[in-house]
Length: 310
Image: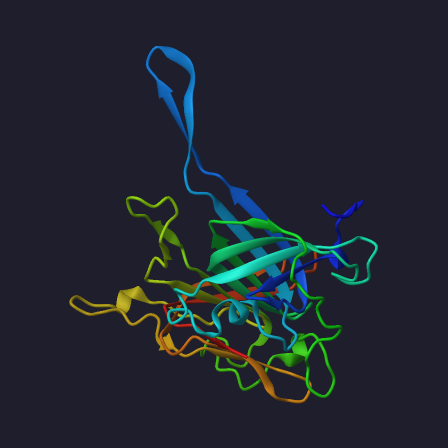
């Protein structure tokens, strides 16, 4: 390093995606795996060779939803998961001085790791009743390079929240959201949207790195609604009524659109899962003698349809 630090903490490192600083970042981790393959030989116990396969660099980022672009938007330009599946991005993690008030405040800093050709591997949006609304995204790539000085600019000093800037919390869940029948009229305590893109590498002869990491379609997307129970789960199943040669009608396809608004009343983010969402599980739990409330979790499943705008 061009400078000496005693530690790295939240104010002395920052992240950019495609040369735009992530605003509202809460945590970042970078894991590098060299994927070695051991080769042994007959007649000798000691290892013959450690063959390096393609390395993998995995970056996991958490940010609050604050009116600024999502990590997904920065990495792909926004839109649907399917439509942006082949988008690759540059991710830069910068480390500055631990005595500066903002990244890059001292000339010659920060030092950076630059990771190119990164694909989104998974994402989760958590909308809780207690705490900030958050986004978690994991990106995967094959290369990283140390640069000095780095190019990550300091983030701005405030969120974007309309008339009164604010990180989004429970009051910013919009009543214009479209939720399934089982959840309508219930007291929501959390909504969680998640997707694992299951990236797999494709190789070709004459080239070391993979030329593509494809999404393993069909892409499974889940939405979980936690509600504070005031009754049982009200889900009726009677398989005895399904006669011979009849198809069971146990779970209807429904539309789910989650909308978040800012303090000015404008819709800030929209998560559109369209109208093929089907109830997968219902979990009734809690209410033990410790005094806790019963919570019912309704989990819905759909495939290939998630569009994120905002």
